Length: 268
Length: 273
Image 1 (spheres, rainbow over the protein chains, first blue to last red):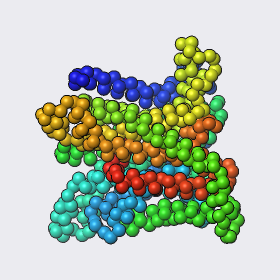
Image 2: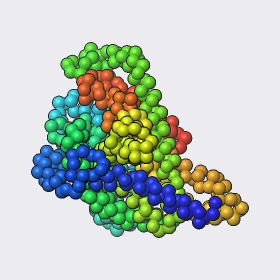
Image 3: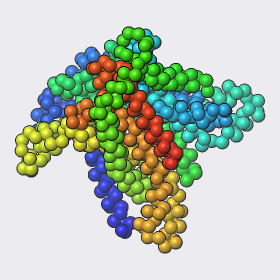
Image 4: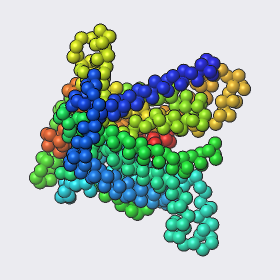
């Protein structure tokens, strides 16, 4: 096959796949402007009614607020703990290092339903009432390995000699950590935080098991899926969330490219 | 070191251990003791549990393979044909992964439903009669929806693995007289295998534990093993049995990860941001 033919075939496939992946989302956005409670074609006409209703949907807004709090706090916890773990793994050789690495990455490979059930049993055994904080704990657990891997990748891109130089010049351990190690990792920290936040904001399977009376946005949307006449509102909330996610994604992608990308390009 | 270890111990290891303990309980509420093997007996005496586990493993295998097969050409195209624009093009491709998972699944319900896009298209072409939900509420609907959800995640590790291949290896292969297809099969593909392995791993495992997608688009015939677990906690309120079902899944996943890791190191984690 000639290279030129390959290019055209590849491009055609790319465009086809892009349409396949984006079409369902566009469909949702189109329906959020459709003047009908039914999600069927043909479209009935243009309306902003669903967006107006969205402003008055108290439950939905409070669920979104809960998701926001859970996202921010769990990402904060995951970023802090994940970064500490990353520094330990990238910079120190301690006894049990590989065991620690295995345990810390385990949440990546455990189906959420298992973790959700296990945490539910834990909280019930301890007599902890389910709330947004139980969901926060669950989300922090699943995000720690992601943060750890993102930050460790960034740190291993720099030799420790910057830190060694700081120490040789008389900086204390904490001084080195605060003024050398963390600034080096800063772009990765921000990217890790944003990645955690987006994961948490959309996470449903764990939240379903760990939610008490306070819903998250996905849990609320799930509860609405049974009522066909409430679907347009759910879809409209998604359309709004899509805009926010895209904005966050673009920001974090840019930050990550600044961080890891520079290293990759320098090596490649 | 200490704080992350403590957190993982308290909220990750401890819950899993307590879950194992729970499998010996007699009922959801009441005293822990006396411990019993009743749930284990129930599990062994209910062949449908095991059958559903097998079915779900097969479905996860199929979903992971399809996602990789569909994502592979696009990763190849982006890395080897698009030059500096590749990151932008990749970002466009993975954007859908950042919209609500539930609503992406819902979108497929709209597409596959009896008044959905697919059916209306087929009706207007005269291929099928009115109102036959062709695909919705079946295992096929679950697979289509999950493959749709996972393609971006499968594409990322493939992309990363291919991006790391030294272009000089391709040049060397050509200089030594290999045809493009020989270069692909003997140079590019072997070097991409770690990415393929990661992609497989990170699609297979979450799919194995799925219960949301089957609930929404699978119907009765499309339920998966994860639905059994969810059901014990949300409706049947038989937590000890649910804990056992969950533990079986955990053991299966752990065994799979262990064997998998032995042979193929997982190098890429599909972290997209």
